Amino acid sequence: MSSDPSLPPIPLCVPEIRGREWAYVKDCLDTNWVSSVGQYVDRFERALAEAVGSPHAVACQSGTAALHVALQVAGVAAGDEVLVPTLTFVAPANAVSYLGAAPVLVDVEPDYWGIDLALVEDFLRNRCVRRDGRTIDRGTGARVAAVVPVHVLGHPVDMDRLMVLAAEFGLSVIEDATESLGATYKGRCSGALGHLGCFSFNGNKILTTGGGGMIVTAREDWARRARHLTNQAKVDPIEYEHDEIGYNYRLTNIQAAMGVAQLEQLDSYVAAKRAIARRYVEGLAGVPGLLPMRQANWAQSSWWLFTVLVDEAAYGSDSRALMHRLHDLGIQSRPLWRPLHKGPPHADRQRLGGAVAERVCRTALSLPSSVGLQPEAQERVIAALKDGAAR
Ligand SMILES: *Cc1c(COP(=O)(O)O)cnc(C)c1O
Image (tube, rainbow, N blue to C red):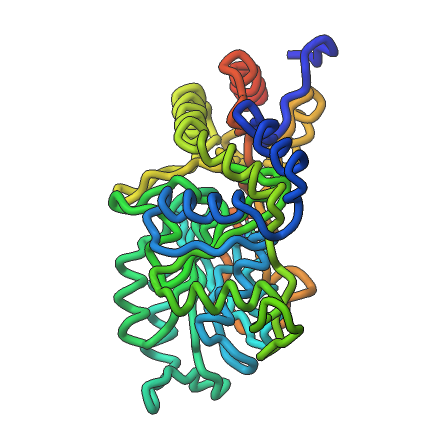
């Protein structure tokens, strides 16, 4: 296949704006409610809480800000350790670091690329001790305070198993559900399974507000504290009184207006992602050396970015060569994140394994997965992938 300049480029993942976004944003501008207070912020919080089945939701500026505040609300403090998968976008490890705590980087399991719970369990049982109701890392003497399961690419981690372990060792569980809005685990929504859950509404996520995030939790006191921290820990509506160090992490009414409109379409977005995944799985079946991501029997993934592993020997080229080939055909694809233990910010962290994450990173390629990806465009991607196979 040669590149045909008359064909439109196919991006990896772009927003889909076809609902009431314009109307709601215009309403903010018309009424002068443009900043961090307004009915859309409240509406967005209530609608998201309802969508994921969590009692409380607190909007904030980004998914990273949500993680930062959620970790703090859960009691993570300077000197603590927090278990984080090494194969993830960097945000959760950074958020742990903002609090002066240390991420312990855990390898992922090879099937769904989520945090390897066998390694987590081995660490807790064999390298930690319980003392005064706390779990202490024997190697460092630090308290192990929390774990951040990342539902990588929209596929939920085996949360029942994790919650049992967390209860036994007194750990808080902060779900990084930034890629998995709409995904379910045994019928329950990701983000509402741990003690706190975090979502992102960045431009490439399941739905977008331009930029934004949300914390959900079942605990009313935690929701109140999260709201407090995102609002500079202000205690008086008139006087400038603050009772601790807070952050300006609020979401604006304009962003929330967009979020309300986007959320009205969530079901159709997730349905579109699932249809895209189905077409890739069917279209790529039998192509030697391309292994599509899979779904566990406990999961209904949101299939955020459909991703394949490229087996160089069987396919005939490696993931990066394939990426360049697709690029030349106007098709955008992208590798997964470099494992955190391989990059300067977190290279010297304690880690538990990492070889699986390195292999997945070397071989994975995410394919165009926009909600608005049309079947004809997806056929072009599939044809290019077939055409690139061992020849
Ligand atoms: C996108 C993402 C975030 C951060 O979200 P922002 O809104 O961009 O700050 C956090 N964790 C993971 C795994 C992500 O993919």
